[in-house]
Length: 200
Length: 200
DNA sequence: CCAACCTTCACGAACGATCGTTAAGTTAGG
DNA sequence: CCTAACTTAACGATCGTTCGTGAAGGTTGG
Image (cartoon, rainbow over all chains, first blue to last red; front, side, top):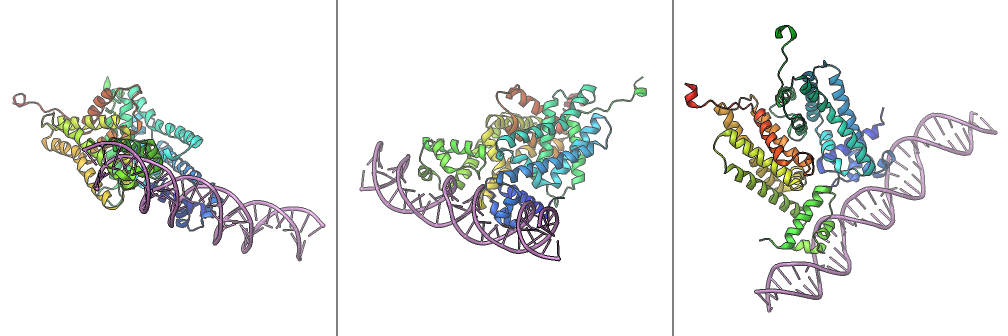
């Protein structure tokens, strides 16, 4: 269990970074929002950079866990797996908009080694999409001639949710997820395989 | 014609804002990059905010002009018009990545009236996509049951180009544009109309 | 048992650096 | 002469960071 102060700090930093951007956010405001003094923050994190790093790490952990959990509940079928990834990603972007926007926008504010490590994790995360799409193309279930561009389009569609979706809007998140799954399958040109007996 | 100093200033600000983000960028570095002193900048722009505002305005002007130009060259057919918008947007994002990223990411750094005015322009720009998609759905050429989500997916696909595309990569911009047009038509479920004689 | 000691968590004050901005003055061209 | 273009110098504010201090709580050695 994380100390309460640390949790409040991460939450405050997340909101400040999401609202103003890393460069414009002040660690004084962050500490104040977390209900502690400026120097108390330095007891938990060694500086502004490490605060951002912790935020990106925590957000990525949560996202990877959410997708992995969703993947654990479906079959090996590429269509099922792609659907699960799209659904989990869309849900994550909608439910954790501030978290997601920091993951997506503040990468450039990381310096040196931390950037390199984060870029590696992000590259791995795209495999959540790449693997089922490539598998579906290989098996003939997905007919798209452009798997790379289709993948990027699917990812962009999901990620954009963090920027425009509002919970109090006219569309429920569950409904949006269904539509995103359908659009993703459209993008890869999904054609359900006839089963073995029907083909003979 | 804009004075040379002003052009250099905008170019320098564009690069700095794109690389570091508005909050982390220093107007001293911008002025130096533009080859002039700090206060010379204040001769052209009244501050950092106005620099960003000018950048967003100029970028939006260029984008709108590019799309309007493309629309002027095609028929009234919804498929043609959507294709033209997708092609022009993808090209703009690829050819003006720094410009586009500022348009897409630094909106939140605008304050007060300027933000309001920019948000209005941005809303108008989405009509470039909305109009042909809604027209195609109305005419029956586009079969998608989710025109709003399809539109957002198309826009997200195009916008993402500014973040990942590199001119020295394996894919030419022209080839990418072709694939984006195809993917966009896939997203709206485009089915070419049989012509009048063939239908009877 | 108790005193000495350590770690954890928190504070206010101050550091030097850099920030955006302004003022006053200089130069060049019509 | 005037204005546009540009300079150096400095302003106060705020930035991220560091320092020294101390209260609380547990651990250890005599």
